Image (cartoon, rainbow, N blue to C red):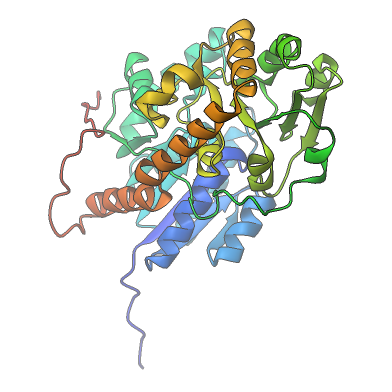
Length: 389
């Protein structure tokens, strides 16, 4: 009886939870690139828009029921994931963000080459006992990751300073510069034309990490200098009600959108006042659209900017006065905004093209799977640290 030959292409399993924001964007970009390269790609996630978009790309998508944060349901989530892994039988597992990284490493315990990508460390999001427990887990769980992928040197340093001894590779975030591009003829979102003053846009999940509350506290000072300025918060999340209570009448809430590109293009200035990041995608996407950006000087921010823009674009985190001064200054100087947007676009094209990101990840997979034809060249952004047993 004739038996078909086994498929020689390696099967990669991506695991994602959360399934929105930057994590979803990175997973979608990687899966698309890997499918084009001929890999067998399966993704496990708790359904939703990410699952639908992955299926549209042609990926094999498996439902993995898991909450966003650790809790009493974790043992059951790990058991379900272990069964999923046994069904898929991947040659390599790539776990994205803290929750998927926790469950994947507990389910695998080193049985399959495992890549863990924090997308900002879990212990930065909490404090007190919860933070201490998160640090202890990351130190312990590092032994079950063949590689920890950080999106910036700052993120890698944060892990090392917390005592997470692992084999690290730094792969900066990238964007699709064809999609995130200027288009002066594209129609703006209807809300963007509701008023005549300069438009400030903040794109991100409405949560403590993204710091929209700091921007709202700064907004009255911005209006003191630029009275007709308008602000739109694009996104949704657990802090929406609290933020609406803080908001001035010139602030609009656009909610979650399927595509932020029209908002970037409509903006006179994009602001990201985060409290912590690995390397945020929103500034890169805004620069891709040729828009100037003000962002807080948190993990990965300086690495995402050309050096000449740091003095104009970076402000200290949780400093409403400094944020208001930077925003008002740029809103009052249209020629400078245009120059910064142009510099940012050129920087993204040269340094943060998603194709470069995907190729670096492909090189890493080949190394871990032992299929590289020759050793990958050592690059300045890669650091190796010993794993402590």
